[in-house]
Amino acid sequence: MPADSDIVLEAASITKSFPGVRALDQVTLRVRRGRLLALLGENGAGKSTLMNILAGVFPPDAGTLRLYGSEVRFPGPRAALAAGIGIVFQELNLIPHLSVAENIFLGREPRTRFGLIDYPQLNSAAAAVLKRLDLAVEPTTLIADLRVGQQQLVEIARAVSEEARVLILDEPTSSLSAHEVEVLFGVIAELKKHGVALIYITHKFEELAHICDDVIVMRDGRVVGESLFTDLSREALVRLMAGREAKESFQKSPATAGAELLRAEGVSLPGAGAGVGRPYLVENVSFTLCRGEVLGVFGLVGAGRTELLETLFGLHAGRATGRVTLEGRPLDLASPAAAIAAGLALAPEDRKRDGLVLPMSVAANASLASLDRTLRGGFVSPTREAAYITPYVERFRVKTPSLDQLIVNLSGGNQQKVILAKWLATNPKLLLLDEPTRGIDVNAKREIYAFIDELARLGLGLIVVSSELPEILALADHILVMCEGRQTAEFARADATAERILAAAFPAAATTAA
Image (cartoon, rainbow, N blue to C red; front, side, top):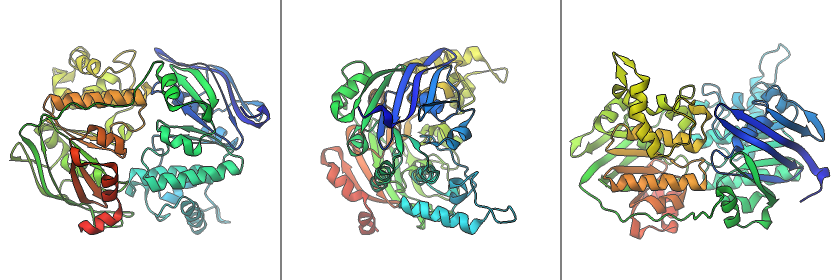
């Protein structure tokens, strides 16, 4: 390992507990000047808890933080940032109804001599940061009008603008296109040259070869491995994370397609608001899906995949056009309530914003879509709720001390399982999954794959949107490719290759399909 004199930030013997669980147990971590430390571990390993402590979100129960060798205590994130520690959280932390520029420089706005915000200077400074990240949006665009991938780049732009000496990146590429990932890696290389110390959390091993210097592995709240990145193989890292031999391959069951379940003809959704850049978010998309089939939808960020699922789920009533039938009968796209009543379920891309109620318990979240099964005298009965929800929570092997545990205290993988349990409790016919394994570790991802495969064998229809091509190739019986809102290709599983899918996903394919 490099010399100790290069250590910028050290966390020594950090311990942290929450009700029912010890999240961190005597964890020690050191991050060095001009180097990137990859922090690896399954969901629930304690990575996010450790990052929250380093960023001043909450204090440790025991242990010491040292910055440049001096002990520090952070009463809050502002104090950590003032000390030079910046963080980009996996879950977006932006204000939707402020502009891109206002979010980047929130709390650090340039002022006129009268004390007012100097908007020309603010927008100019934001434009310079956006250019550095090759993000083609106007500084005045509202965050609410950007897609998730663009919002994630704005988060990164904010962190870069803060000129932190320690920068923590938690799954920063989870919503980025291949080009955006390349740009980010270039920025990381530039930061390292300027002596910035970086901590990088990811589940994408293929990224590490491009940017990683050192690696530390956590499991069950403890550090179980620490090394130069070049000294550990991929297999060794997975073994350390899992505590056992772990194969990443997934063997899909042979497809047993039944009768036609869903038919979509000419589905379109007009664009609205700034930052769209084209008249349609979804334009003239058609496909069919049978019972027991998995349709994979692939495309780059901004391709319209999320909007397609939202349209099918009734989230764009009054704007969407086209004909959709379910079991041969017209599907009412008037509202999510109508979609749920018809047998549809949607696990959204941003689970914390759109899929969960964070201040509520596991039981309350799991029962949200089937409250009628939990009522007694017009009120939710905790006894009936627990009795109805427990089989679904157990089926998805949700790791939680109890059903009363707040959902916010669960790992991302277990939160995703609760969302799946919630929808399975409604006895759906069609399950719409938007990035179902985003930010989920190797072993939890394999569990989700197995659940999807099992549900297909039980006769459900599933539409899976994913930015990970290996995931699409592993799960899907046939694959729909989108680019800039248009359907550019559709492949049967036997005909699909990574090269053919990627060729259809780039803008030239959309122009050809127009």
